[in-house]
Amino acid sequence: MLRVEGLTKIFGGLRAVDGASLNVDQGQIVALIGPNGAGKTTLFASIAGFHSIDAGRVVLMDQDITGWPVHKISRKGMVRTFQITQPFAKLSVLENIMVGAYQIHPNAQEARVHAIDVAQKVGMGHMLAQAASDLTVAGRKRLELARALATNPQLLLLDEVMAGLNPSEIVEMVAIVRTIRDMGVTVLLIEHVMQAVMSLSEHIYVLSYGKIIAQGAPQQVVSDPAVIEAYLGRGAAKEVAHA
Amino acid sequence: MNTPSTAVLHRTVNWKLHIAVLAVAIAFPFVFPSSFMVNFGVLALFYAFIGQSWNISGGFAGQLSFGHVAFFGVGAYASAIVQMRWGFSPWMGLPASAIAGAVVGLIIAVLSFRAGLKGSYFALITLAFAEVLRILSNSVDLTGGGLGMLIPLKRSAANFQFEERAGFYFVILVLTVLSIACAEWLRHSRFGARLAAIRENEDAAKALGIDVFTEKVKIMLLSGAMCGVGGCFFSQYFLYIDPTIVFGVDKSVEMLLVSMIGGAGTVYGPLIGSLLLAFVSDITRVLTQIQGLSLVLYGALLVIIIAYLPNGLVDLFKSKSKSKTKRIADDVAR
Image (cartoon, rainbow over all chains, first blue to last red; front, side):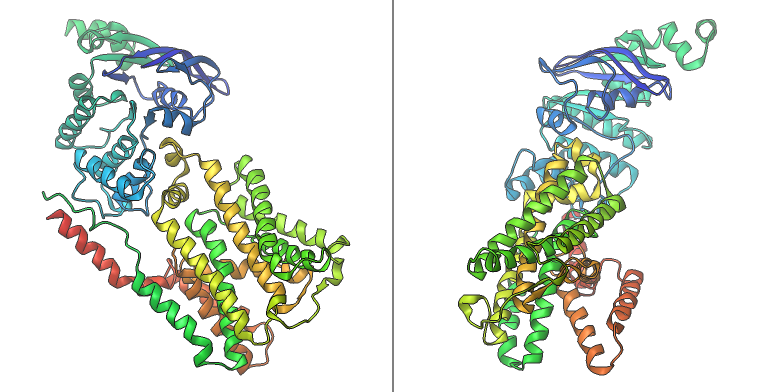
């Protein structure tokens, strides 16, 4: 589905992403984790076309999309959400989702029906007429998801959709992400909430200082000494093992 | 939770309102046939029309232009040139000015959006373009330079000059109706939804697959064409144009003012704003001899409206329909 090869993004003297490679197979939920400042969001933005990249290749569904403009990548089926939610503030929830729905339904009535359908899938069916600016954090996160989902993507890039949610909201969001996967949408997510990462993902990539330092099944990755040291500091793996 | 009926959330076209407004507009010159009142009506509709041309790009798409007069002036000159220099019927001025306005809209949009100009930078570059056009028209022979162009008086409908002012009134009424129809279409179409998305958040719009650059160019082209036609009407109504009149900053400001005062991004905002401004300007002219007092009042009005009705005068009419939206929301929630 998605193959990223040796992606490098340099900001001035900083190699924000340094030769990162990853692979997402169709139908999977794959997580990208890493300490703060590791370059996860930069990697996401680079994959989705928001940054021009300095080296590497992005291949989506057997097509090299490196350097494509954002809207073209999105229309091909890879749609991202934003960590800092970017609602169309003055529009209603329904209108927000309809902007996504219009990508596949030029007709307003069809777009509306599709948007309402999507809203119900993410549990926003009861707040369609509400202005996006009036939503809570949880509502905004869902709206991000709903808007992207309404474009009928093949692959969703979810940037910290759990951040700022309370435990019960996280449980709901985990269920929503699972529903989305069951609809046939492949998911690549950045996440800090380990509870969500562990219960959702089939494969995890760990990014630290712009490099992929580990990958594999969830249980295997969290016990990897390199990962523990990346999060907790040098020598931490030993202490954790002793404890 | 009930499934909300899709009809409930449909943005309906308020046909009753449209028909009522149109009926009043058609009756106006018959009820008030005096030359003074018809002139008032012509000017109010004229500003509503060019205000709407600003509104579809500035209000609906959020591309705040401070130099819409560039399109206006080019349209005015295009219509004068096709009849006086090239000998076409004055009516040909309408398509000519639309094309001229559209071309200038396209050029300005491609150049400034290619360079990624947004917000106040875009406003400034449009102002600069308008000034460049003013200076150009001041110095080339085709436009008659600083002397301007005097369109010979020959009163006949075939000549786009009417014996009665009412003739002009109905021409500008048709144009205004078309512009309102255009705004109403934007409210209900995919194109309009994309423009609203771009106005609210360009990055999010891009992420959802919207070709932001192309959509912005398209709306500037449409807005330019509309504003150019406004220029054509202006030259036929006043029969004289010169660089300072048709490329003056004051026209750009008036287009922007009527939209902002009435309600930017709304269908009736420009009409409501222009009625108020035409009224204020006529009252001050009748009651006092002070030159430019109307501009002072415009400024004061703008301040008051920004302070108390930031979404424009339409908010006064909306309070009722807003509670209706809330009711719908409650209904759906139940």
